[in-house]
Image (cartoon, rainbow, N blue to C red):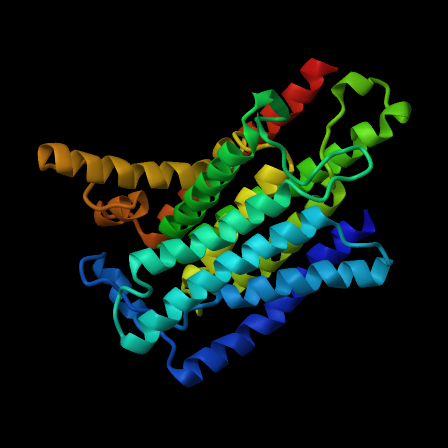
Length: 356
């Protein structure tokens, strides 16, 4: 359990002291954010703010994870390493996208096909590897069964699992990316979800089927390969994002960019897949789902009827154009995300209690 504490503290410390150094470096090179002309007028003042800040919490998370392992002498696990790989791989795709935007001074970075190809390569690699490396109980990091609070139903097979995993990875990455439109919004929301996965990992470890002989009710145990290590990764991410939020909150000194949003989305999907809580992620990350749906509704309505439902999509900009201040939107959306996490954790616990 000490690993969880060490990972969170190291991640927090590294981004608190490392992010301002990254800000200076990016500002010196002139790597500033491009701002859309059709957005809220208040955003014009953000033009030129250093971006690609996701570099800070990606590196901090990786160092925090391995730092916790080094301090405690505990071994790494395939589940933890795969989630870190997915986070870093998606972050690399986002970094290339951000870099091209900055160098070419345009709002579009990687071409759509190139960006999708990068995400597919990383996602497929993760999904295929996640079905390997069985432990002595036969559990692999991921399962070919669908899951809510645990696996349920029949196996969908490896091919459909890869497709399902890709859908989750792309959906969460795009969801976080769409949410990252206001200072601190996506970062603060991510902190809450990673906190939830830290709790879930600890609970699954304590109630693991590997410890069935010591449990009061073995029928309610969790068949998850490396739940404690997933909690360590989630704690490292929570701490790193918390430290980054100090500099990313309004008025932001740095933006995470696609580097950060794609990495966070990948990490969330990876944690859900490896912890057997795939469908529960839709509740735990409810704000990301809500904002993504606002874009789907806006685009669908315009194409079908020629009319827009919202003044602007994603949803947070709709409320800005209605006169809400940026800070007001962020705080109220954080409250919504907090409620989603509470409901999600409540359902997770209720599912365990019902089996018990």
